[in-house]
Image (cartoon, rainbow, N blue to C red; front, side, top):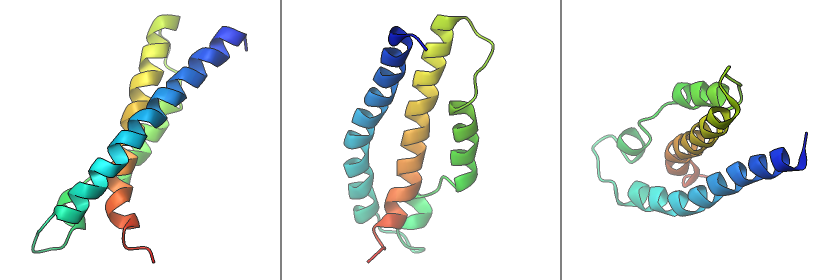
Length: 97
């Protein structure tokens, strides 16, 4: 792997983590403020683990695209994976003692 490929991969992961650092508190506030007859998890954690699994497979698979499109694909799928994971996990993790 060349140094520019490592830099590109590192940038994709860095941007996804920066987005996650912003989105996690937002998701936590949404989970805390949700009032629903079934509790806080059903409306906020409506995304099930199947969708996270699908995006994990998509994020860590390599399609047969040109190199610039592979970078865009990796960037988008990694951001979506982190967003779905946070939307799914934040309401559940607030119950852990």
